[in-house]
Image (cartoon, rainbow, N blue to C red; front, top):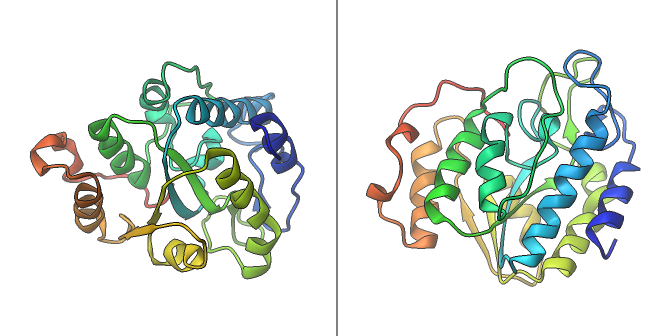
Length: 228
């Protein structure tokens, strides 16, 4: 797993019960016929761009969400913000992998408004890099189990080895606890879901020395689903 291509190929081979692997699975309701391939290519291009740009920070949340990374293959990124992701990563091309309207999602919306203000490459990831869902209910979000984290933890370690980041930003308490034993500086911020949006914004602004006036005004109230 020492190259973006081999990393994505091995991630696509992971098969766990009650999880959706966006890099190999196809949703029969929303996906195009080549959705898994498109998401693999999206992730590979982001990894390549982050390496080329020498991105020194990785933002890490807990799990992929069903309205965000499950659909795009890009962590913390919904379809409504694929264009912003293309620009931030230096003009790469990221493909839609689903049919119908492009969905927006709360965590991804706030995340990308802040990333656009920061204006520098940041790699995005999840402690558990697949979408965990309730049994027989694939359009739900649940917290991953410790056994699931253990099964996919080598991917986080491989990502750290490839990018050699100087700092990690843990989005939410669960992510912060999972990353606590790593030998890297970890800055923890509140997750923006369930009333944490203002604290999340303030935490990122403090890390990057941003003033609140630098943000676009639409971060105030976002009527979208909670998870990325």
